[in-house]
Image (tube, rainbow, N blue to C red):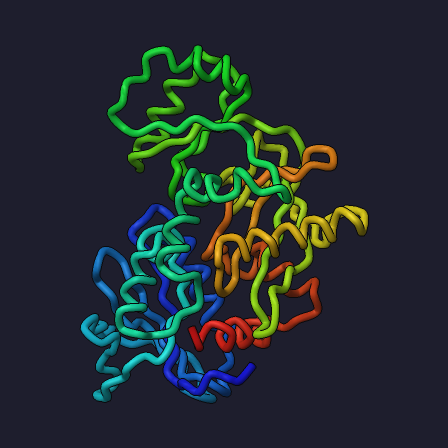
Length: 341
Protein backbone atom coordinates (compact mmCIF):
# COMPACT_ATOMS: atom_id res chain seq x y z
CA UNK A 1 0.00 0.00 0.00
CA UNK A 2 1.46 3.32 -1.09
CA UNK A 3 1.28 6.37 1.12
CA UNK A 4 -1.23 9.03 0.08
CA UNK A 5 0.65 11.94 -1.51
CA UNK A 6 -1.79 14.73 -0.57
CA UNK A 7 -0.82 17.23 2.09
CA UNK A 8 -3.93 19.24 3.04
CA UNK A 9 -6.17 17.06 5.19
CA UNK A 10 -9.51 18.25 6.55
CA UNK A 11 -11.16 16.70 9.60
CA UNK A 12 -14.89 17.44 9.39
CA UNK A 13 -16.88 17.40 12.63
CA UNK A 14 -20.09 18.78 14.07
CA UNK A 15 -23.33 17.67 12.38
CA UNK A 16 -26.97 18.56 11.81
CA UNK A 17 -28.14 15.95 14.32
CA UNK A 18 -28.46 15.60 18.08
CA UNK A 19 -25.04 13.93 18.08
CA UNK A 20 -23.18 17.09 17.04
CA UNK A 21 -21.45 17.68 20.39
CA UNK A 22 -20.17 14.10 20.51
CA UNK A 23 -19.02 14.54 16.93
CA UNK A 24 -16.95 17.56 17.97
CA UNK A 25 -15.23 15.55 20.68
CA UNK A 26 -14.48 12.75 18.23
CA UNK A 27 -13.23 15.20 15.62
CA UNK A 28 -10.93 17.07 17.99
CA UNK A 29 -9.34 13.84 19.21
CA UNK A 30 -8.94 12.49 15.68
CA UNK A 31 -7.37 15.73 14.44
CA UNK A 32 -4.91 15.66 17.33
CA UNK A 33 -3.78 12.13 16.41
CA UNK A 34 -3.29 12.56 12.65
CA UNK A 35 0.33 12.45 11.54
CA UNK A 36 1.66 16.01 11.70
CA UNK A 37 4.82 14.99 9.85
CA UNK A 38 2.73 14.14 6.75
CA UNK A 39 -0.20 16.54 6.73
CA UNK A 40 -1.37 20.07 7.31
CA UNK A 41 -4.43 19.25 9.43
CA UNK A 42 -7.43 21.57 9.09
CA UNK A 43 -10.43 21.28 11.41
CA UNK A 44 -13.79 22.05 9.79
CA UNK A 45 -16.81 22.61 12.02
CA UNK A 46 -19.86 21.97 9.85
CA UNK A 47 -23.43 22.42 11.03
CA UNK A 48 -26.58 23.23 9.01
CA UNK A 49 -24.63 24.30 5.94
CA UNK A 50 -22.28 26.64 7.80
CA UNK A 51 -18.80 25.13 7.27
CA UNK A 52 -15.91 26.96 8.91
CA UNK A 53 -12.20 26.17 9.24
CA UNK A 54 -11.83 26.66 12.98
CA UNK A 55 -8.23 25.52 13.45
CA UNK A 56 -5.13 24.39 11.59
CA UNK A 57 -2.07 22.38 12.58
CA UNK A 58 0.54 23.11 9.90
CA UNK A 59 3.08 20.48 8.95
CA UNK A 60 5.38 19.95 11.92
CA UNK A 61 3.73 22.71 13.94
CA UNK A 62 1.20 23.20 16.73
CA UNK A 63 -2.56 23.73 16.58
CA UNK A 64 -3.68 27.29 15.87
CA UNK A 65 -7.30 28.42 16.21
CA UNK A 66 -8.48 30.68 13.39
CA UNK A 67 -10.40 33.84 14.25
CA UNK A 68 -12.34 34.78 12.31
CA UNK A 69 -12.89 31.26 11.02
CA UNK A 70 -12.77 31.14 7.19
CA UNK A 71 -15.78 29.79 5.36
CA UNK A 72 -15.38 26.66 3.25
CA UNK A 73 -16.08 27.20 -0.44
CA UNK A 74 -18.26 24.20 -1.24
CA UNK A 75 -17.88 24.61 -5.00
CA UNK A 76 -14.41 23.03 -4.83
CA UNK A 77 -13.95 22.13 -1.11
CA UNK A 78 -11.44 24.87 -0.39
CA UNK A 79 -10.96 27.82 1.96
CA UNK A 80 -8.99 31.03 2.13
CA UNK A 81 -6.71 30.46 5.15
CA UNK A 82 -4.35 33.24 6.20
CA UNK A 83 -4.66 34.82 2.76
CA UNK A 84 -3.87 31.60 0.88
CA UNK A 85 -6.36 29.41 -0.95
CA UNK A 86 -6.21 25.86 0.39
CA UNK A 87 -7.89 23.11 -1.59
CA UNK A 88 -8.31 20.15 0.70
CA UNK A 89 -6.80 16.94 -0.66
CA UNK A 90 -8.58 14.53 1.69
CA UNK A 91 -11.49 14.54 4.17
CA UNK A 92 -11.48 12.58 7.41
CA UNK A 93 -15.18 12.46 8.25
CA UNK A 94 -16.06 12.58 11.94
CA UNK A 95 -19.67 13.75 11.65
CA UNK A 96 -21.91 11.43 13.66
CA UNK A 97 -25.45 11.43 12.25
CA UNK A 98 -26.62 13.62 9.37
CA UNK A 99 -25.04 14.53 6.93
CA UNK A 100 -21.75 12.75 7.63
CA UNK A 101 -23.08 9.28 8.34
CA UNK A 102 -26.08 8.94 6.01
CA UNK A 103 -24.26 9.31 2.70
CA UNK A 104 -24.95 12.98 1.97
CA UNK A 105 -21.45 14.24 2.74
CA UNK A 106 -19.93 11.24 1.00
CA UNK A 107 -21.95 11.99 -2.14
CA UNK A 108 -20.74 15.60 -2.15
CA UNK A 109 -17.11 14.51 -1.84
CA UNK A 110 -17.52 11.83 -4.49
CA UNK A 111 -18.85 14.37 -6.98
CA UNK A 112 -15.78 16.55 -6.36
CA UNK A 113 -13.52 13.48 -6.52
CA UNK A 114 -12.09 14.22 -3.08
CA UNK A 115 -11.00 11.04 -1.27
CA UNK A 116 -12.43 10.48 2.21
CA UNK A 117 -12.19 8.11 5.14
CA UNK A 118 -15.52 6.28 5.20
CA UNK A 119 -17.77 4.03 3.11
CA UNK A 120 -19.14 5.43 -0.15
CA UNK A 121 -22.44 7.31 -0.27
CA UNK A 122 -24.61 4.30 -1.17
CA UNK A 123 -23.16 1.99 1.48
CA UNK A 124 -23.28 4.76 4.11
CA UNK A 125 -26.97 5.37 3.35
CA UNK A 126 -27.83 1.67 3.67
CA UNK A 127 -25.94 1.17 6.91
CA UNK A 128 -27.26 4.37 8.51
CA UNK A 129 -30.80 3.01 8.30
CA UNK A 130 -30.96 0.12 10.77
CA UNK A 131 -33.86 -1.61 9.02
CA UNK A 132 -32.24 -1.40 5.58
CA UNK A 133 -28.93 -2.64 6.93
CA UNK A 134 -30.56 -5.64 8.60
CA UNK A 135 -32.35 -6.42 5.34
CA UNK A 136 -28.95 -6.99 3.70
CA UNK A 137 -28.05 -9.51 6.40
CA UNK A 138 -31.28 -11.38 7.13
CA UNK A 139 -30.54 -14.25 4.75
CA UNK A 140 -26.81 -14.77 5.44
CA UNK A 141 -25.65 -17.86 7.31
CA UNK A 142 -22.95 -16.24 9.48
CA UNK A 143 -24.99 -13.98 11.79
CA UNK A 144 -28.56 -13.88 13.12
CA UNK A 145 -30.99 -10.97 13.16
CA UNK A 146 -33.78 -10.47 15.70
CA UNK A 147 -37.33 -10.26 14.35
CA UNK A 148 -38.68 -6.76 13.85
CA UNK A 149 -41.63 -4.64 12.71
CA UNK A 150 -41.18 -1.53 10.57
CA UNK A 151 -43.33 1.59 11.02
CA UNK A 152 -43.57 4.78 8.98
CA UNK A 153 -44.75 8.03 10.57
CA UNK A 154 -48.42 8.73 9.93
CA UNK A 155 -49.53 5.14 9.38
CA UNK A 156 -52.22 3.67 11.61
CA UNK A 157 -51.11 2.05 14.85
CA UNK A 158 -54.38 0.20 15.28
CA UNK A 159 -53.70 -3.24 16.73
CA UNK A 160 -49.97 -2.62 17.08
CA UNK A 161 -49.90 -3.99 20.64
CA UNK A 162 -51.46 -7.29 19.55
CA UNK A 163 -49.15 -7.48 16.54
CA UNK A 164 -46.05 -7.02 18.69
CA UNK A 165 -47.31 -9.52 21.25
CA UNK A 166 -47.99 -12.21 18.65
CA UNK A 167 -45.00 -11.64 16.35
CA UNK A 168 -42.23 -10.51 18.70
CA UNK A 169 -43.18 -10.92 22.35
CA UNK A 170 -41.79 -8.74 25.12
CA UNK A 171 -39.43 -7.12 25.86
CA UNK A 172 -38.88 -5.19 22.63
CA UNK A 173 -36.71 -2.24 21.67
CA UNK A 174 -38.39 0.67 19.92
CA UNK A 175 -35.84 2.71 18.01
CA UNK A 176 -35.54 5.22 15.18
CA UNK A 177 -34.20 3.44 12.12
CA UNK A 178 -31.64 6.21 11.67
CA UNK A 179 -29.51 8.13 14.15
CA UNK A 180 -27.14 6.91 16.81
CA UNK A 181 -25.91 7.25 20.40
CA UNK A 182 -29.17 5.52 21.46
CA UNK A 183 -31.19 8.72 21.02
CA UNK A 184 -34.91 7.90 20.85
CA UNK A 185 -34.48 4.27 21.94
CA UNK A 186 -36.74 2.69 24.57
CA UNK A 187 -36.83 -0.79 26.03
CA UNK A 188 -40.49 -1.76 26.37
CA UNK A 189 -41.54 -4.56 28.69
CA UNK A 190 -45.33 -4.14 28.64
CA UNK A 191 -47.84 -3.61 25.86
CA UNK A 192 -49.34 -0.58 27.63
CA UNK A 193 -46.01 1.29 27.32
CA UNK A 194 -45.57 0.61 23.60
CA UNK A 195 -47.31 3.64 22.07
CA UNK A 196 -45.47 6.15 24.23
CA UNK A 197 -42.18 4.60 23.14
CA UNK A 198 -43.23 4.78 19.48
CA UNK A 199 -44.20 8.45 19.81
CA UNK A 200 -40.86 9.16 21.49
CA UNK A 201 -38.93 7.43 18.69
CA UNK A 202 -40.86 9.37 16.04
CA UNK A 203 -39.84 12.74 17.50
CA UNK A 204 -36.68 12.91 15.38
CA UNK A 205 -37.36 10.50 12.53
CA UNK A 206 -39.95 9.36 9.99
CA UNK A 207 -39.32 5.62 10.36
CA UNK A 208 -39.20 3.39 13.43
CA UNK A 209 -38.32 -0.22 14.07
CA UNK A 210 -39.72 -2.39 16.84
CA UNK A 211 -37.21 -5.15 17.45
CA UNK A 212 -37.53 -8.29 19.56
CA UNK A 213 -35.29 -8.10 22.62
CA UNK A 214 -32.49 -10.65 22.70
CA UNK A 215 -31.00 -11.45 26.08
CA UNK A 216 -27.24 -11.85 26.20
CA UNK A 217 -23.87 -10.12 26.31
CA UNK A 218 -23.25 -6.94 24.31
CA UNK A 219 -20.21 -7.34 22.07
CA UNK A 220 -18.59 -5.01 19.58
CA UNK A 221 -15.77 -5.33 17.06
CA UNK A 222 -14.27 -2.88 14.56
CA UNK A 223 -12.88 -3.68 11.11
CA UNK A 224 -10.67 -1.68 8.75
CA UNK A 225 -8.56 -2.32 5.66
CA UNK A 226 -4.77 -2.35 5.79
CA UNK A 227 -4.34 -2.18 2.02
CA UNK A 228 -4.24 -5.96 1.65
CA UNK A 229 -7.19 -7.38 3.57
CA UNK A 230 -9.87 -6.65 6.17
CA UNK A 231 -8.45 -6.53 9.69
CA UNK A 232 -10.59 -7.06 12.81
CA UNK A 233 -9.51 -5.27 15.98
CA UNK A 234 -9.78 -6.84 19.46
CA UNK A 235 -13.34 -7.50 20.66
CA UNK A 236 -14.94 -5.48 23.48
CA UNK A 237 -17.67 -6.59 25.87
CA UNK A 238 -19.89 -3.81 27.24
CA UNK A 239 -21.29 -4.31 30.74
CA UNK A 240 -23.78 -1.84 32.21
CA UNK A 241 -26.27 -1.69 35.06
CA UNK A 242 -28.68 0.19 32.80
CA UNK A 243 -31.41 -1.61 30.88
CA UNK A 244 -29.23 -1.32 27.78
CA UNK A 245 -26.21 0.60 26.47
CA UNK A 246 -28.06 3.94 26.38
CA UNK A 247 -26.71 7.49 26.13
CA UNK A 248 -25.93 7.74 29.85
CA UNK A 249 -24.09 4.43 29.81
CA UNK A 250 -22.18 5.37 26.66
CA UNK A 251 -20.98 8.84 27.59
CA UNK A 252 -21.41 9.40 31.32
CA UNK A 253 -19.48 6.49 32.76
CA UNK A 254 -22.32 4.06 33.50
CA UNK A 255 -20.70 1.13 31.72
CA UNK A 256 -17.61 -1.05 31.81
CA UNK A 257 -15.97 -1.72 28.46
CA UNK A 258 -13.75 -4.77 28.73
CA UNK A 259 -11.04 -5.08 26.09
CA UNK A 260 -10.20 -7.72 25.14
CA UNK A 261 -13.60 -9.25 25.86
CA UNK A 262 -13.49 -12.26 28.23
CA UNK A 263 -14.37 -14.77 25.50
CA UNK A 264 -12.63 -18.02 24.67
CA UNK A 265 -10.37 -18.07 21.63
CA UNK A 266 -12.94 -19.78 19.42
CA UNK A 267 -15.68 -17.22 20.15
CA UNK A 268 -13.28 -14.30 19.76
CA UNK A 269 -12.28 -15.64 16.35
CA UNK A 270 -15.95 -16.11 15.45
CA UNK A 271 -16.81 -12.49 16.31
CA UNK A 272 -13.85 -11.17 14.35
CA UNK A 273 -14.52 -13.36 11.32
CA UNK A 274 -18.22 -12.47 11.36
CA UNK A 275 -17.32 -8.78 11.48
CA UNK A 276 -15.02 -9.17 8.49
CA UNK A 277 -17.75 -11.00 6.57
CA UNK A 278 -20.31 -8.27 7.32
CA UNK A 279 -17.79 -5.62 6.25
CA UNK A 280 -17.32 -7.46 2.95
CA UNK A 281 -21.03 -8.22 2.49
CA UNK A 282 -21.94 -4.54 2.73
CA UNK A 283 -18.99 -3.33 0.65
CA UNK A 284 -17.48 -1.20 3.39
CA UNK A 285 -14.42 1.05 3.24
CA UNK A 286 -12.40 2.67 6.00
CA UNK A 287 -13.22 1.97 9.64
CA UNK A 288 -16.52 0.37 10.67
CA UNK A 289 -17.72 -0.92 14.05
CA UNK A 290 -20.22 -3.78 14.30
CA UNK A 291 -22.37 -4.31 17.42
CA UNK A 292 -23.87 -7.63 18.54
CA UNK A 293 -25.71 -9.46 21.25
CA UNK A 294 -24.07 -12.77 22.09
CA UNK A 295 -26.85 -15.16 23.16
CA UNK A 296 -25.29 -18.45 24.17
CA UNK A 297 -23.20 -19.42 21.15
CA UNK A 298 -25.27 -17.34 18.70
CA UNK A 299 -24.32 -13.88 17.49
CA UNK A 300 -27.23 -11.49 16.86
CA UNK A 301 -26.51 -8.44 14.73
CA UNK A 302 -27.53 -5.12 16.31
CA UNK A 303 -26.20 -2.36 14.07
CA UNK A 304 -23.16 -0.95 12.31
CA UNK A 305 -21.41 2.39 12.72
CA UNK A 306 -19.57 3.79 9.71
CA UNK A 307 -18.39 6.80 11.75
CA UNK A 308 -17.75 5.23 15.17
CA UNK A 309 -16.94 7.40 18.16
CA UNK A 310 -13.30 8.49 18.34
CA UNK A 311 -12.85 10.32 21.63
CA UNK A 312 -9.95 9.25 23.82
CA UNK A 313 -12.39 7.12 25.84
CA UNK A 314 -14.32 5.65 22.88
CA UNK A 315 -14.49 1.98 21.96
CA UNK A 316 -12.32 2.00 18.83
CA UNK A 317 -9.33 3.78 20.41
CA UNK A 318 -9.47 1.19 23.20
CA UNK A 319 -9.36 -1.57 20.59
CA UNK A 320 -6.45 0.12 18.83
CA UNK A 321 -4.47 0.42 22.06
CA UNK A 322 -5.18 -3.20 22.97
CA UNK A 323 -3.94 -4.26 19.52
CA UNK A 324 -0.63 -2.57 20.36
CA UNK A 325 -1.00 0.11 17.69
CA UNK A 326 -0.51 3.83 18.01
CA UNK A 327 -3.48 5.95 17.00
CA UNK A 328 -1.32 7.92 14.56
CA UNK A 329 -0.10 4.78 12.77
CA UNK A 330 -3.64 3.41 12.73
CA UNK A 331 -5.06 6.59 11.21
CA UNK A 332 -2.25 6.63 8.64
CA UNK A 333 -3.39 3.16 7.55
CA UNK A 334 -7.03 4.23 7.30
CA UNK A 335 -6.08 7.30 5.27
CA UNK A 336 -3.77 5.45 2.91
CA UNK A 337 -6.23 2.59 2.34
CA UNK A 338 -9.12 4.93 1.48
CA UNK A 339 -7.26 7.59 -0.50
CA UNK A 340 -7.23 5.60 -3.74
CA UNK A 341 -10.94 4.87 -4.12
